[in-house]
Image 1 (cartoon, helix red, strand yellow):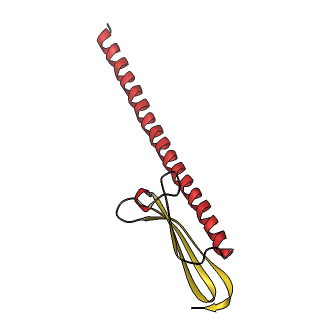
Image 2 (cartoon, helix red, strand yellow):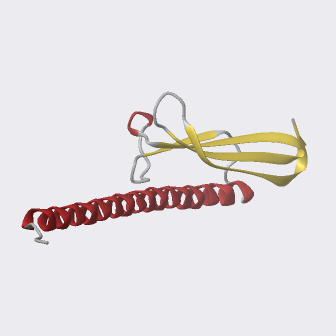
Image 3 (cartoon, one colour):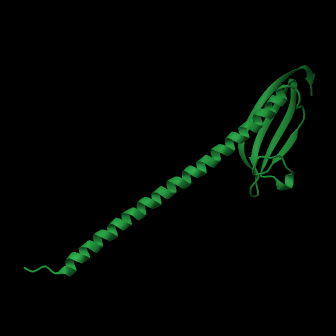
Length: 132
């Protein structure tokens, strides 16, 4: 029985192609994991910054320094800017409710047709006087 070198080399090529296919699949999975991690990181960073900004405005509201409806616009780097250049908006609504002032603080991403809410919080503050 004589072996032919063609069969041996074709088996080696098949094994090599399977190994290359395996590494291609593994690298595709790794790239997907890195992209997902990057997306999650950006979303978390955006949420943390939104929370930090709203926290400051909530403190102003509780200290009676913010008593009316306000809209504040921020660019992509979270620097205050005009409405035309804005990537984010903080909407502050203040509503009297008897001896309370009710504040709603909402951060929105301004992308596309409709703003997308990132974070929202509501709080009340006692005024001591009846308001309508």
